[in-house]
Image 1 (tube, helix red, strand yellow):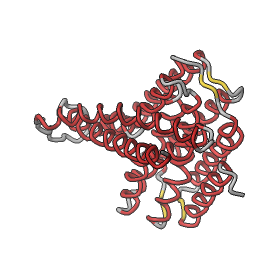
Image 2: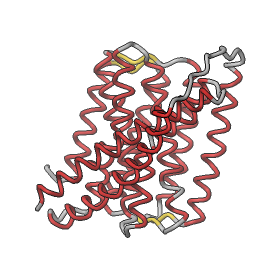
Image 3: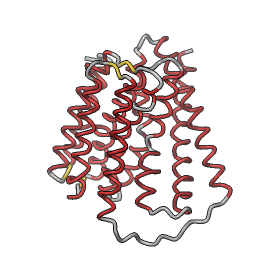
Length: 311
């Protein structure tokens, strides 16, 4: 029976991630066809789209009665994004160079949103009022990022509008269906496995679900690192982490109080704070070396080992 639910978990995860891919691809093309600039499409559709698996799985968790999964998923995804995704990207690309613009705007915003998120988590429960605060903060973050970067993008290149075909609409619908059903069966499998293996649902959410839902970021950043496009590899993480902390937690929090399970609070939250601090320090130096990448990966291995009490 355990193997059956492991199979369901893996298949649901694949469907969830593939659904996000189809949704992003088709909606990105539609955005360009409607005349939106590539920058606007990147900030909105692509930036938010890679975090859709986390958001949908968190909603399903709330409606299926396992609200502790929401915070564990968001915290775990943010840890995986920095330690696993950036760590692997730095190792693959041998180094990641950070531009001046990134340091001026993105790093302080990431630090500020993380500090707010940590403050909200302090009493181990997220209320509706705190959820509203997180969502309002994301609105400010989104507008500030949009208009601050727009100042540097006054010359908007004229991009040829792509022609929409029926396949684009079909993939949009399939992407949404994949996200919904993938998330539902992912959470079902998580609950069953946690009961059978006597492992807290939060522990599975902060590791397996977090890694699985961070696969889009890992693939995008690793490919970018291989091609020497550090800006893409790093920029993808900033938007994703802010969205996870403020929206992936904020929206489900409007429907239910969200508890923070013990291991997420004692191990996950401090690890997220340390990972963000290390990332900000690395960003200030404008370069993430290969040895820093290995260091990030080793911290992630230690984090997982502590969660499962391997030593």
